Image 1 (cartoon, helix red, strand yellow):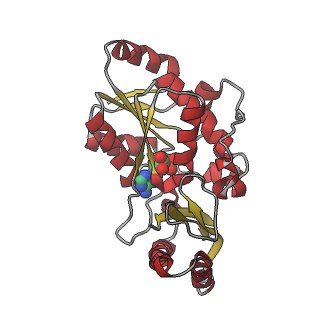
Image 2: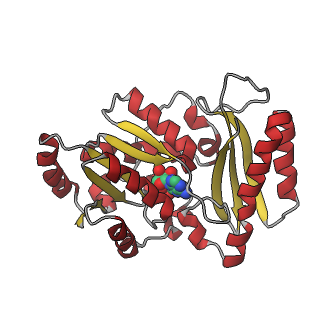
Image 3: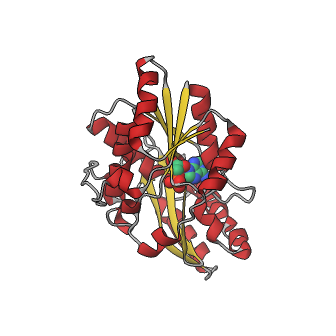
Length: 282
Ligand code: AMP
């Protein structure tokens, strides 16, 4: 498996392949790989001649210094996991200076308001950081297709907006959420939970699933009330938000429109670890 740490080396390797019209699939990650990441990788391997996976804990998308510091960094293990999937994966694991060249700040992005909802509201500057890194990685790798998980549904919609606004020549492929057996959405952050908390965290998807059932017959207000009430019964959780929003605009709503698709979005703390998840409601 080829591992590049420098964008100049990676570009030099990829550019003759691009000239030969080889299709490039790209899976950006922050590492600490789990099966959710690997499912994106497998899709890319099927759909493209070449697959590049990046592993980079992007400092500019963290609004919390402790979260950045504690984010798991496990490159050796990650490479081993990838090698079980395929030896043909190209890995790009740059340093902060290779990406930011001594100027570790975000550019400003405007995503038609998508950035002001949910994660954008609770993590100021997060989506400027995401836009900055995704755009830079696309410029270096020049992928035909890039794979993003619905686990970060707001991020997926923001990346789609980034691509359409900046007319970037890449197809964005959304991939469904990969879950642990318990239903807990796989996340690198799950590794930081104690075994007890990891078990308890299955409640998040249980409540989301029940909320989906309730949404079929009850109002949006009733559904939100159910979720809030459910978490109040479990003081080990601190609910940051549960919102029901239109999938396209990400605007939360209190009235149902049968022509629209809705999702329930949640952010919740357990053992001070922030977990997010979402579910399609109709
Ligand atoms: P991250 O390393 O957490 O930034 O995630 C890298 C990519 O993997 C993003 O597109 C995520 O949405 C996606 N991803 C993370 N967890 C999952 C999951 N459980 N199922 C599917 N995709 C995921």
